[in-house]
Amino acid sequence: MPKTYHFIAQVSDGKYDDGESAGTVRASSEAEAKRAIAEWVRQDGARKGSKRPWTATRIELT
Image (tube, one colour):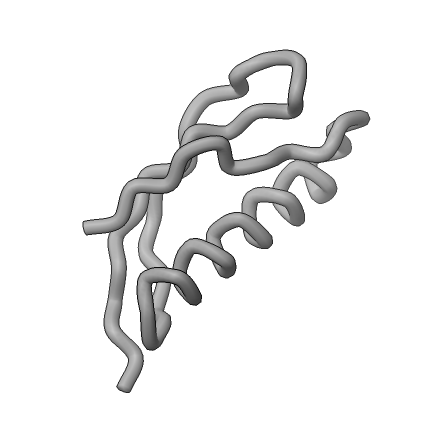
């Protein structure tokens, strides 16, 4: 059964630390939640027109 996780993710484009993203995600495990957050960060960078791909360098779940 899916559980709701609150997260804070450090975001980087590989050259600069671009700040943090925070929110919630529903997933059946912490590993699945972290994969979903990492993919969301990557897609968010692409939506915002970043020339370098964004990555989540640290993800904290609560």
